Length: 451
Image 1 (cartoon, rainbow, N blue to C red):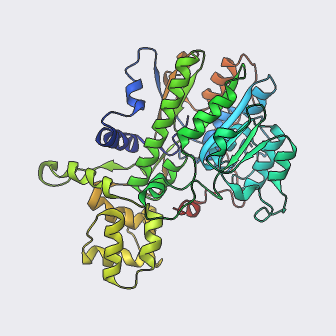
Image 2 (spheres, helix red, strand yellow):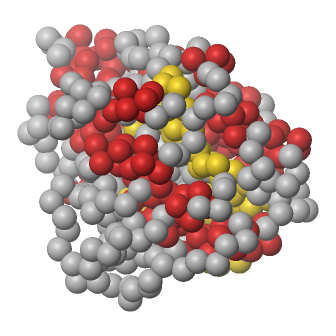
Image 3 (cartoon, rainbow, N blue to C red):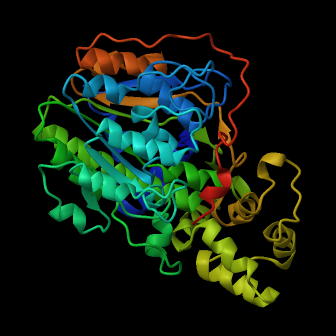
């Protein structure tokens, strides 16, 4: 289970939010009270940088090798590594991927594909078919349709011809046959942010929730003697890339609900190992001291409850405002924040791509709006980029003793193949590689501003 982009700051804020709205801590923290839980911290750096991207991080779990940012299970020399799901599939394990991003995105791809550039979603989708991954649930319809694929291939038809049930509506999960593999693609790109799905302002696609997809995937795979499933709360990361505390926190709550589903499954199937972690931190948000003696911090945090729209969706509306009054009214409708004239004047140029921040990591319309809304919520970010944090990891169930103390991300692959009773190791490389990035391999931050 991967809460993509989760820093300790967003985990803390989500726990505050859970207590506020659910009157209980996150299940993440409740698990720490269990005597059989193992806790580790993990170094998630890539081969080429102390700051990893998702593809290099997931590939470290998926191949046991640190590779340059931007690649998926390919070494700096271009050698193709054998991904985890090939190793497990060869010994009879069923395999599944569930995500709130495009199903071809970097984190799920790290377990089941091998490409020189993480941006090659068309090829990743084809590789999923070739490897016959048993359950695929997420977004990314555009990588399977004739209209959107560069090669104009009708990949949905190819999956159907290969015996897959193709699911495209939330209700399809309940009626999907249990004796065939599944391809579930519920959005053209990434799933909409939870805050937009339920805020009542944005018009977005109707999609299943992460917990719903996780429950369906577990039900489908539980008939197998052995299976592996990766569950990704992928839009936590994208909320943080947008300096959007409300969006990221709501995605963390959705991820926590998926943890509940997995813990419930483990009660019925105690031979199940569950590993819960993140691939890296993003933006490092935190609740700040507000007011004299920080006496306004609590109320500022409660203002999250009035936010009904993600920052990307909000910025679209604000950029179309015809006058200052309409700008202020739309901002208040979406967030409950009454913006001052001075702050409005400071943020407006960013919406027209003419703003200029003192720190380049905040030099964007979402970075500017995140700073403005920090006055409302008390939560500010260090940037719109990944950071180098060592990350927490929880493990529970048989094999969890291998996840304790301080570990390297490549050791996760070793633990998984060991747990499966398989002896396999990909060729290793030295840490820092002098390698030019592949064209288009950099993480496309702009696509996360889809709302």
